[in-house]
Length: 275
Ligand SMILES: [Zn+2]
Image (cartoon, rainbow, N blue to C red; front, side, top):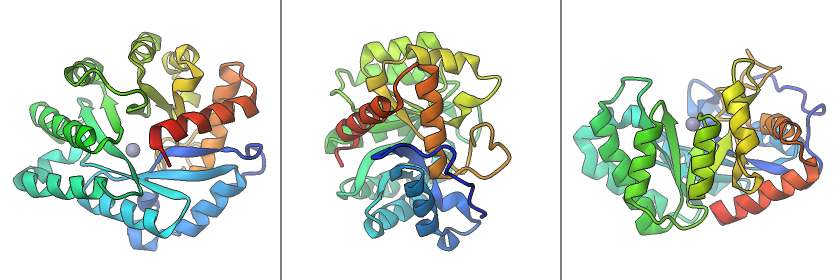
């Protein structure tokens, strides 16, 4: 992968971090990923930590192993809502392995879990069962839940409500995809909204309105790489360094001083991930 030049959007030190990425998807085979190269590029953009997120057992294991090898990498582990149908025949064993991985010290969240009503890879009722099972693991082990919510806002919120009250900084909406009204509801509940590069997309005005409404101390920034490359780099492969670009964009959108916004992101990251 040809690295993008990062000099034009690097953050002032000590910078910030990428709250959600999939470095293992940067190559066809996760064994071929140049993790050191991705982390070097991130560091030179002022992104000094990344949370690598699992979607199935293999990517969850890869995330934990990589977090154990690289001090800048932390892990989140879970079965993605689109992958629960494939895991269903082995549900008990899979959830037992996820729970055992969650207990590893380098694992900072249970994710990504949640509901995806946009794709039909897994039955919605089955997704809800697995979402609840992941929430129960997160609550048992005292780690935050990192949520994938695609066209399922109402059901995600009502399932979260079943488990209320939530401790502060324990619910993260990864790749937040709601509008200003949903951002206000999340802010009211104390949920974290993690914005990805799609906030820069031309057709994303409702998402920009949400980012304006979201309180700075409840915001995180992520790449969801290799997906969702921010404008003006669309068409190239996303990677953790580009979190810096999205952070700059959010600071400008919210009319926040960049240094202060990075400090707020770091403080929120400390509270959510306790790294
Ligand atoms: Zn993701």
